[in-house]
Length: 273
Image (cartoon, rainbow, N blue to C red):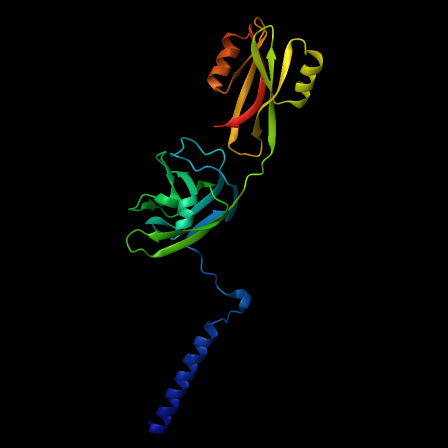
């Protein structure tokens, strides 16, 4: 075969291979672009939470803090393999000083993640297909906007697998006072309290010869979310005097054992825990 024919044959073969490869490749338009699935997802919802300025907890709670707004943080592993990961919490000094984000781990222990981070430090194992949500209860004691970033990392290599953030917007309490009025019962020799305006006026207008009105005793801020503890009221039929308690067990005990003497009158108002 001449050199000329060999060269032509080589060019023909190369062209045929190129055409064959081109025939197998289908160009992708913008709408057809392949999406790379997120193998790990760390997602906070809502990403921005509004909280009222309050008092930071002095110790770890035993239950979800009643005054706190909660943020659900979901961790999902669809990587196809089991990984040992850790969640690193990054917060600036301002956030660490004025914000608490309490959560409970699988062992029932409560942690302030803004200060302590998301444990355990050595990481934890998440199998393929794992998806779980942890509730963070956010409290702030100073008006302001605070940002905290949560980063999911490989516990061994520190490779960043996913990240999310929580913005805490803390505002002042709106002071909405509710007066608690006091009367003195001449016959029983005891005081009577009510936070009801209509009851106060009814007692003054109809029972003024028995109950001496002594005015507002104190006020309650009804806008304060820490005022979640109900104060229950009973009326002692024999002594014609009222009895108050904020203890759930005592309330139930009086109802169960002394119902013939103490008439349960429900919740008078709410106070702080």
